[in-house]
Structure formats: structure tokens, C-alpha cells
Image (tube, rainbow, N blue to C red):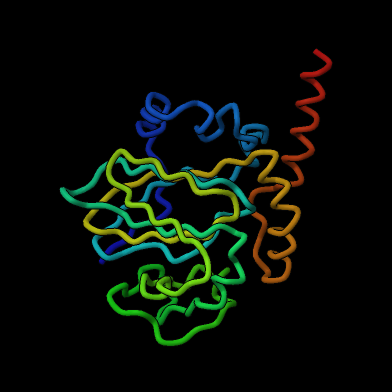
Length: 220
């Protein structure tokens, strides 16, 4: 099975997105503080994904508390993606039931549940949450079936995983807002220091440049 991840988005896709996605949801749009950064400092976060049947992305959170967006652009007949989304407030409950994957590969065997567990895998992008594990879970999980043309928006800091059924192509991006920056400084960046994960998105620079830009607008 092949799961092609983090493919650079073609320019044609970017142009088409502007015709079908509201501007306030667009990457580097009017409600995305990534647009404040000079282009040379921006991390590339508009990516395409090509997934075959029974592939997927393990449970994870988007970097630095950003909001995630995922648009399925095409797929085989009857293809879909199953999303499981769990809000940050249920993190401790989720940790109690998670089990690490049998493999460190991004493409895992989704046909059988893994055999062992450690809650530390929550932040490793290798933990798989199987439907059977949710039967007696003490928290709410949102399940979304995404088909071609559907846009899934993932709340800031929410845990989520994706399982592909059939072959499909998706385009994904993240947005930063003032609220997501607050979440980043409150708990995401301190966590990254603990687990030795790079910040990637230059949050402090975005705060500084945003304040400068807003002050300039007020003076004008």
C-alpha cells in the first residue's frame, strides 16, 4: 500500500482553491496570521496527500495549536476517509486508552489492533485509535466520513486520525489566528520543550510582526 504524504501542492490547485474555499479559510488569507511572515520565513504547510485503501495518518495534533483544514479533491467510486476527532479537553481520558502502533511507519496495518501501549505515544504520531477502543471510552469522539468535495476543519489542539477507504487525493493546510497563538504559548510550546520537538512555525516572530502590523493599521 502507498500513502504519499506532504507532496508540494501544484499551482493549479492553489488557484482552484480560491474559487471554491471562502477567503477567510484560505491559507495565507485575511484570517491567517501566517500571511504576516515574510515568505522566506514561512514553513511550507499547503500539502497534497494521495492515499490508497487501508492507509491513514495516526492520531496526532497539528503543530503549534494551529487550525487544520483538509479538502478531499477526488477519489475512486465509493471512496471516503474516516476521521476521528477528539477535543483537547479529553486528552487525559484519551491517554488512558491509547496503545502504540506495532510499527513506526507512517503507513500502518489497520486491519488488526496493536498489542501494546504507552500514553507517551500520543505526541509521537505513531499511536492508532481503533473503533473498538472507543466503545467504553469516557469521552466524546467526533466521527466524520469525508467524501470528494468535503472540507474537514480540525479545531485547534484537537487530536485526530484519518483512515482511507479506496483511493483518494486530499489537500491540507493550517491557519494561525490570535486564539491559536494563545494556545501555542499556553501549552503546546512548553510541551515541545519537554519532548524535544521543533517549533517550526516561528510563533514569537508572528506575534511581534502581527502587533506591528495591527499598530500600523490603527495609526492609519
